[in-house]
Image 1 (spheres, rainbow, N blue to C red):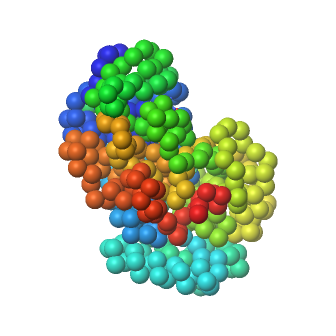
Image 2: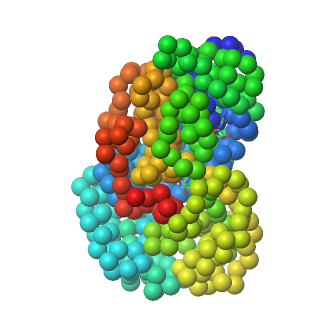
Length: 386
Ligand SMILES: Cc1cc2nc3c(=O)[nH]c(=O)nc-3n(C[C@H](O)[C@H](O)[C@H](O)COP(=O)(O)OP(=O)(O)OC[C@H]3O[C@@H](n4cnc5c(N)ncnc54)[C@H](O)[C@@H]3O)c2cc1C
């Protein structure tokens, strides 16, 4: 272990690893990633794997479409198959009112250069005969979206970063942030004090705790999200699908498993990773409402992960306010799909000192300035969305 680095990243999830890789690519000096557990142990190894850029606000669309373009060549770039399946992504409307909103969203998406189309109820049913017609009024299809294998993405970034001499240290917990004269100068870890020119908070569900060590109060709350996987089934779901109406999302793997998650309405903040009976009941009920045939299917697995969510459910990206050399890469609820762009754009910022246009709106100051970013197409726990 060196005692000094140019950049230390706290958190070996997909965000921290993407940033480390992108910094190494830009020859940003000596870089280290510390994780208190194994690499990918956080939400990055537990998520729904869904990938899209067809969101409902200009800020989200611009940022996530940058990411989607990077996903297209990610396996090649990292020399590791991340199993990005570009099968298409459908955001399902359950009511005609939702479809009216979706029509407006497609106009915005097209104006920003996205390839999306509004599907009628008949088209959705033709493509997914197993769907309950009462839950499908139509939807927005993004043919370039889909899903990727989350573990593979973590391993791909980790290997690529290591090849470029990034030091990745699992089981090394950051216990405190060292500050000198209003500037972060290092971290205290379970392996001792390590100096750094810059420290990045990419600690996922623990980002608020890390920020507090630096005297910064992140306006976030931690939520436990849960998912399930069924036994393998014959292919019936051609696209990745999210249903804002039921706060659920799902896809079918190449092995045939139906994999999906749902957010419980009025979810309370929770940190532990224990799966719950309430979540399995909620998910099963919603999935059977959407696809009645799933009622007869066996459940194979259930698991949970945590995310640290801001009041507007948008990520918090860029330099901290009032403290030098401390960068925020947190508040992620869609941090899997966002990782390629966040890593690339934050690395650009760290190397140049200029905040790239597509991450500027996500700066922490937006809360003080009264400029939250509300996106109408998200599937997020309802409690925290204003
Ligand atoms: C059930 C579920 C479904 C999801 N579905 C999707 C989806 O379909 N699409 C999508 O885009 N996103 C999805 N997400 C969100 C996505 O997984 C996260 O936004 C993303 O993984 C965040 O990555 P991260 O690297 O910031 O955090 P994490 O992967 O949580 O990594 C943070 C790391 O920091 C480490 N850490 C914490 N504290 C310390 C410390 N003191 N010292 C050292 N290390 C520390 C942790 O051990 C952890 O490994 C989902 C999340 C969940 C839980």
